[in-house]
Length: 324
Image 1 (spheres, helix red, strand yellow):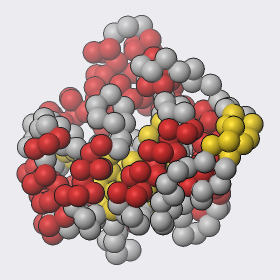
Image 2 (tube, rainbow, N blue to C red):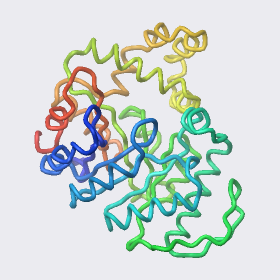
Image 3 (cartoon, helix red, strand yellow):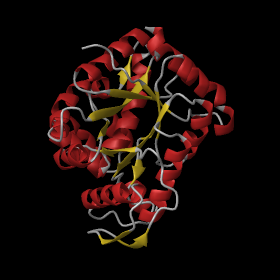
C-alpha cells in the first residue's frame, strides 16, 4: 500500500504559548503535513488552536480529536462547530467522542452516563442543526426545544466519531464520516477497521499515533510506561485493551494500580506493550512504524509527539513526509 495521502500533526506544541506558534504551524505545512489536529482534555480547548491555524495555515485541513460529547450543551456545541467550519470553509473536520469519566465527571462535574447514547444523540442533533433545521426533539440523553443556528456553514463540516470497541466503531461507520482511533498498535488497526467499514468501505480512519523519535530506548520505555499506565487505568481504555486481548499482559499493572502503588504498576507494563503502542526509535524507524498503521487501514495518521527527551519542533521535521 502506498503512503497515506493525508499526514497530520497534533497541535498546539507543548512548552510554547499559543500566540508564539505561528512559525511552527507554517513550517508544518511546508514540511508536507496536510492536517492539523487538536485535542481537548486539560490543556487548550479544541477550537482555539484550530482558529489560529485557520489563518496561519490556509491550506491545511483542521480537525478536533476530540471534543467530548458531554462538556457542552447541544446549542453551544452546534455554534462552536459552525463557527469553526465558517472560519475554515471546507477544511474543518469535527471529531466527537465520549471522552472519559475522568474528564467529564471528575474534572467537569457532568455525570458520565450513557456515553454511547450521548455521542449518538449529539451526532444526530448536529447533523440537523448544521443543515439549518429548527430542532425540537426529546433525544434519549437531552432535549432541545426550538433551536436553530443563526449562521449556517457552507459547506457543512465532516463529522467523525472517536471509537474504541464495536458499538462505537459501528456508530462511526453507520452515521458519521469515519472513525478516530487512539492508543492502539498498528496490528490492532486490523481488528477495529472492519467494524467501521460495515458502514461503507470509504469511511475515513484517523489514528492518533503517539511518537517519540528517540533512540534512547530505555528513557522512552521508562517514561512511556507512566503515560500508558495513566490511560490504561481509565475504565474505557482498560475495557478496550481487554477486548483487544491484552488483559493478561496488563493485569499485573491494573492490580498494582488498584493497590495504590503507581510506580510498581507502571514498571509492570511489559516492554512489548510499550513498543507496540508507542512509536519510537530513529526517525526512519518511526516513519516505517507509522506506515504499518496505514497499511493496516488508517487513512490519516495524526501524530502526537511525546516529549521524552526530544525537541518537538525538530521531531516534527524529522518525522515529516518530506524527510523520507
